[in-house]
Every structure is written in C-alpha cells, then in structure tokens.
Image (cartoon, rainbow, N blue to C red; front, side, top):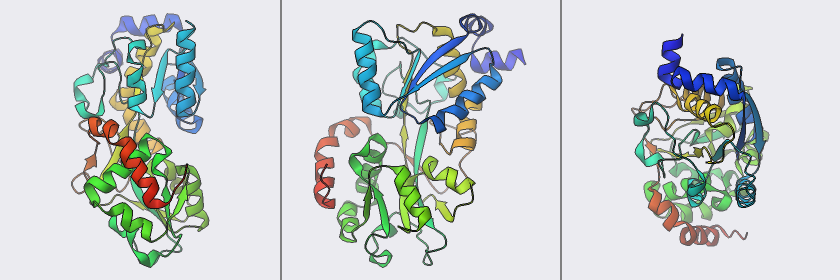
Length: 323
C-alpha cells in the first residue's frame, strides 16, 4: 500500500511528519454536513490526524481570518472558501503549495498557484416528480409561463459566488434576455439553496435550478424529486483552499489537501456529497451527468470579478429584488 499512497498523497517523509504533528485546524465556509464525511473519509486513510473543524459563513469566515492574521493569531492550518476572488485578496497570507497531481487540474479553475479547487459544486435542474407532468428538459424551460406564477424557484443571484456563476451562465450561455424572460413569470425568490430545495420537496414550488449537492441528500433519501443536467451546460464553481504561512501543522495540512485533491478524495466527494471535480478527467460523474452531452462551464475569472457589481445590480432590478 505504501507505494500507491506515496504516489497519490505525498512521499513517506511527509506522511511521517504529518503523523508527528497529529492534528490540523480546518476553516471552511462549507457546512458541517458537507465537511464531516470528508474528514471521516480522510481519517479512514490517515487515522493519526485529528481534524479540528471550524465553520463560518463566507463573509464571516473571511473576517475572522483577517482579524486573526492581523493580530498574529491565525489558528487555521487549512482554509477553504467558496469565493475564489475573496481568498485571492489575501493571497499573501498563504504559503506555496501544490498537490502531487497538480498538472491534472483544469487551469481555469485556479486563481493562484497557492490556492486549489478542493471542492467544486455544479448546478442542475430539479423538479417535484409528483407535481410536474410536463417535464422540463432545458434551462430555457425555466422561463416558460406554463409553470405559472411562483412555481419556479430561484436562488437570488447576489447570494454568493455560486449563484453569481449561475446568473453569468444564464446570460452568457443560455440567452442574453434569460433574466427578463424568467422574471416575467414571477419566480419565487429564495436566499439560498437549502430553503429552495426544502420548498421543492414540500411542493411549494415545482421546479428550480439548484446546486446538485444541495438537492443530493433529498434524492438519496427518496424525496419526490428528480434532477437532470440540461444540454446547454452545467455551470460549476470551483472553491479555493490553501495553507497559511503561519500554519502550526503544515505537514498535516499538506497531507489533508493532497488527499482531498487526489482521485480518491475527489471521487469520494462526487459519490457521497454530490460534488463535481475540477480535475481534467473526472474519476466519476454524478448520476445522470453524461459528459458527452453536457459540458461543464467555468466562468472566465476576469469577467467573474469585473462584471459582478454591474450585472448583479441589473439582476436585482430585473427581478425586483431589494437587498
């Protein structure tokens, strides 16, 4: 077992140094329901590393990191955030790092040599299988009046990096007037994916674009929902993870990220959490995702940053949303 482990996760001396450290502190904007299975799977492979997990919503997490760093008391050994642009703003806090399989990652999913797409989430279209008779087949179907007022659910575009990615995709790939057409049928707006998926299961809405990992647990538990990936494409959002220069357990941190970014780690997140991957060649795909038919879409980073304010202002105006 030693040779394959060394090839995937790092040389024996790294593993031994991580064993001596015996712990790491992990900061993430991801919810515990998403990170606990990852930590458990990592510990199945490397039981000698105790992972202390701290979770905070995106902006709060960033503020905590900045405050701790300015006081010289940053506790994190690994930091993972859903908005790459925010971590890029504090790139100077991170040390040089690359996993053993660095060359296998899609270059466009990375914003810095120090930050890596440990997590990658993807948008799909979901519907209540007990209530919808005329099944949606494309993104444009979510603009059709036949679904009726308040029947289409929509997570607000200003909710975060993932929803901004979806909004860019709708306008740049699906149709330039997509927002206008969808706003005309008066979709029900939600602050995030969790209440949207709950409303879909309860039948308060009948169809919605959702992050696959948000609806995945309900699919797995047998809720009356079906999910598909539409032919126009699947917008995906790579997160960013890195190791601070001040990490007290840098070897354990490297081993943890090496495992997460390995094929084994990525396959686990796809299979058990409903993620996608930023690897050029995926070890597997979510159920129903046919890479021959559906192409993943990654926003151009310069546009992701440069268009954000103007386009989100337009989105808010189009949908009549006030923050």
